[in-house]
Amino acid sequence: MINKKLEQITINDLEQLVNNAVFEGKTIEYKRQLPDNSDSARKEFLADVSSFANASGGDLIFGITEENGSPKSIDGIKIEDIDGEIRKYESIIRNGIEPRIAFTIRAIKIERNKFILIFRINKSWIGPHRVIYKGHDKFYSRNSAGKYALDVNELRIAFNLSQTLTEQISRFKIGRIGEIVADNLPLPFYEGGKFVLHLIPLESFTPNYSINLEIVINDLTKLRPIYSAGWSHRMNLEGILSYSGGRDEKVHSYVQLYRNGIIEAVEGLMLSADREKKYIPSVAYERELIKSLDEFLSLYRELGINVPIVLFLTLIGVKGYEMAVDRMRFWDKYYKIDRDVLQLPEAIIESYDIESKDILRPTFDLIWNACGFKRSYNFDESGNWIGR
Image 1 (cartoon, rainbow, N blue to C red):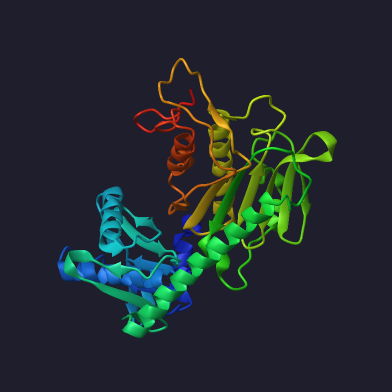
Image 2: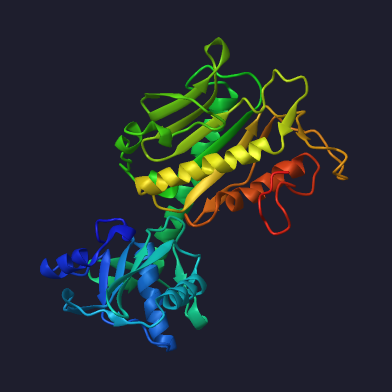
């Protein structure tokens, strides 16, 4: 894999591959031409792509001639409609591999109508993935010699590893919720209900994995707590903690960025116990969570954290809370939440191109359901957030 963000790769980086004779291997492969439209060529292409996802990820580069695995020349591929070509291969990958994988395609123009196409495939944490194109039903992985079909024992190991990862994520989330319920928080916190947002990149559980905290240390505007205009920060054993306070030296919102990339954000002002009536501010809480998720995902991109990312939203201390709406405008029967801890199903973020409102909408609908409403009425029928 070229050691650069995909969008930063230039023709000079490709020339370095040739000049330094960077051989094909586990994380990089060269192809002279794109696959033709035959079924066999597409199956081979999908086998290449899925093998990267099932191994360590990597770059599949089209438009470079190789000889015995060594790149010899940058020839490019003549393509009249590059945008259409990219869409075509995006569709082939989406429909030909199960479950879907995370990937990005970059076109680098080398002369008029000639391009290098780089397919960057992320290492998958929800595999193994199989090729399902037109009855093909095989799993592939990679080693230093290239791709190969997984045998039964290797498949068993791959599925067990996926299950182990699921268990690790669940244990982490359940453990943290238990600590928050017990008020074992990094700082004294406001009384009352709390919104708890967890973002858990799957690669965070890679042994010895850590992120570059300097990016945040040098610009702490990147780590704003939910529903905060001003905040302080400090380093701690876990990583970096940003927090926003108020009365009695207590805080109402904090965000903990762990050294392995996990984010835990807790907010309590919107569900403050000081209010005469227990209610969820129907517009404000969605607006603030969408805004914060935008910021957190932007930070993840800058840190180079790969998708997929698991999102959990949990409401704590909310028994007896109801949704604050104009009753004259809604005919749904409304109720108070019947439990203290409202644990909502996870959402899987598979691409940074998905808008935060779309990621959170199913979760918002469930919160409204818990209060007796059919859905979140802050979205129109087309899925636009209108916050009415």
